[in-house]
Image (cartoon, rainbow, N blue to C red; front, side, top):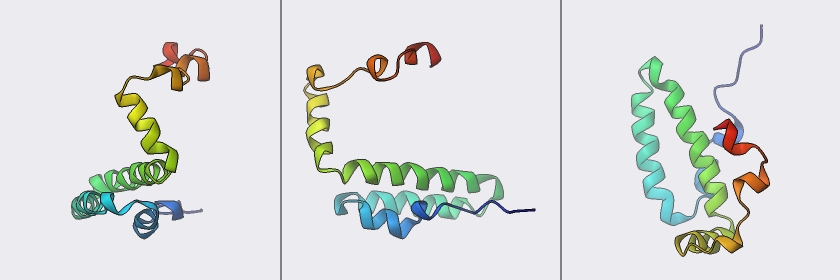
Length: 96
């Protein structure tokens, strides 16, 4: 019988902090510590894993230099700079 790893290496909190821009550190650490405390309850451990996965994805996005420009374009509703989900993933709307 093989065991499933507790978390993937890329979901390591120290690794997330290395990638995450400093302005996000305080929020990440606050949420991480809360989830870690809650994970003492066995049924809440999965929430810790999910939090780490979401923050890893967030860190990857916000560390990309193009992210801030894309975020601003969304705020300004400049739709011509984006591909619609339907164009990128035909049939997407019907699967939601």
